[in-house]
Image (tube, rainbow, N blue to C red; front, side, top):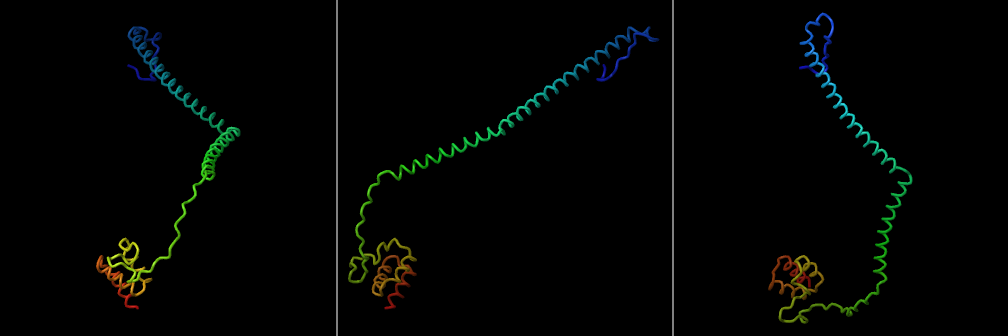
Length: 183
């Protein structure tokens, strides 16, 4: 068997002519090996050339697309299309706001006149245990302590009685005792 690149000897003439039949077969074998090696190399070379041609075609296509995209008129078209989209979006926002503003509004219902808050005094509170401050049971201890400072000493005393009968929070009881003692 021959190796790729091995050369065949020409034995058709010369002192070895007596050995021609055996050598001729060997020479033919070497020739066929060389022919196969060359053909195989050519096929591989052709495949590489085709792959390179495809790559070159892809690069040329990309260059052509880039050249077209970078033409001044193409850039201008893309910029104008983007601006058009932005303007359409802004127009829809303006139309929506204009519709809101121009729609007839219903007149707001008139609020009842405000009354001055009543001060809670022991005489004005009901005997059945109403809270001394509006929404008292929903207030936190911190909120109640802040409001105690605005009460008169008799009001603070009434609040103390109410608190001790309900939640009996130490901070509220202490603040109410201090305010009641101030009077």
